[in-house]
Every structure is written in structure tokens, then in C-alpha cells.
View (tube, rainbow, N blue to C red):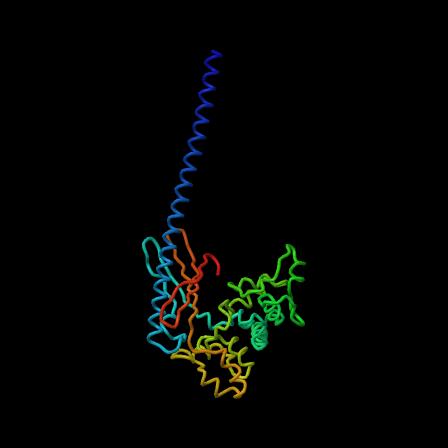
Length: 307
């Protein structure tokens, strides 16, 4: 009888162990299957996003052939509503980055601080209720020398005292997120600045047709009345506003002559945000698109999840 009892207990233990192993294997197989399905969906979403990118480049090429200016009433500036794709949907939005203040314009082609643009950036920061001190700190971050600008500059001596220590870039930035490397920059302050700035090649002009109210006010030192954003948007429903001629007629001749080299009515730098949902997976692709004067276009930088 004792042997039968032991045998029964052993049988129960074996069944219990087998059950645990079976549940573990089943759960692991289900997780592997779900993980694989998610990876396949994300891969499919990436290809759909690249297709949206190619379509956006074609739209920009067609626009260049059909229009002498780039403004917010054109086809490229309209958001793409959710469109069905196999297993999900895709939506997108093109933005003209030349409507924003280019951080790399804080220096000139020789890598030296550009005082007029530093002053414009200071005015922009004040317009968006951020500290104007970031203008000179950022100029020091990207200029070629290692001498702190007066009075708010910062070079290696400041950055090496951070925890962990690091050095100033002393080169043009490729992402506006480098603002967060500035000592004392908070996320709240960065979010105030982020919508109004871009990281483009040194010397890239600002498109007055697409520049928002704070950028226009910063450029013109408040001498023009663009503080009413809804009114500005209403004036842009039919084409470019303000034009260079509008600014020439409004600003003092000397000020317009100094400002004109920084302005344009066309753009060659755009950002496409493509969001693709496949099943329960979602992918957002940020594409920096460069359009050249010959009519060609290409994506020069891509990132997922964040710009």
C-alpha cells in the first residue's frame, strides 16, 4: 500500500510538472507569435511610411514646376487625412522648415557668431516667453572658437563642470534637440522654443510666406503688425503673405536692405511626419526632405518616434 501511495504521489507530481511546462511553453509560444506579428507590422509600417515619403517628394517636385513661391495655401501644405492601407492606415503632414528660425544661422560661413541673427533669435525667444539668454549660449555651442561670448556665452569650461562632463559641439547642429544640452535648459523651456526653430545648413533663408507670427515679429523687430495669428492665417488663404514687397513697403529702407539677404519666398527644406498604424502597431517617421533647384528631392535625415 505504501508503494502504491508513493507511486500515486509521483504521478501527481509528474502531471503537475508537465502541466507547468506545457503552460510555460504555450505562453512563450504565444508571446513569440505576438512579438513576431508586431515586428512584421512595424516593418510593413516602415515601408508604407517610406512610400508616403516618396509621394511627398513627388508633390514637392510638382509644386516647384507649377509655382514661383511656397505658401500655406498650396497642396503640399495640406495634411494627409488617414488613408487605408493593407491592415491599417497612414496619415501625414508636410511642414516648411524654412518658415522657422534656423539655429545654425547663429553663425556665419566662417563659423563665427552672427550678431544680427543672434539679436533676431533673442527677439524670437522673448516673443515665445523663453529666456533670451539662450541665443548667445546656443551661438557659443555651435561657433568654431572656444571663447565664451559676452555676457551669456558658454564654452568647454562650463560644460566640463556638468555631471557628466562634456564639451561644446563647436559645429553646426543636426537636430534642434541639441538645445537640451545647454546648461540649465529645462524641458518646459525647450518646449516653448521647439515649434519655432529648425536645424538647417548655415545661410538658409527664412520663407516669409510660411513663417509664423513670432518669427516674423522677431525678424522685423516688431515694426510690422503680425501679432494677430488668426488674421495672418486668413491673409494666407490665397497665396504668399507677407511678400518681400510688402516688407519693403513697410520697413525703413536701410532695415529692409540689411534684412533682405535672410529672407525668401521659396523653400527647399521640409519635414514630413508620417504616422502608420498596422493592427495594434503604430510607427511615426520623421523625414527631413531637401528639394534642389533642379527639381529633384531626397530625404537627408530620418528618425522614428521623435524628431
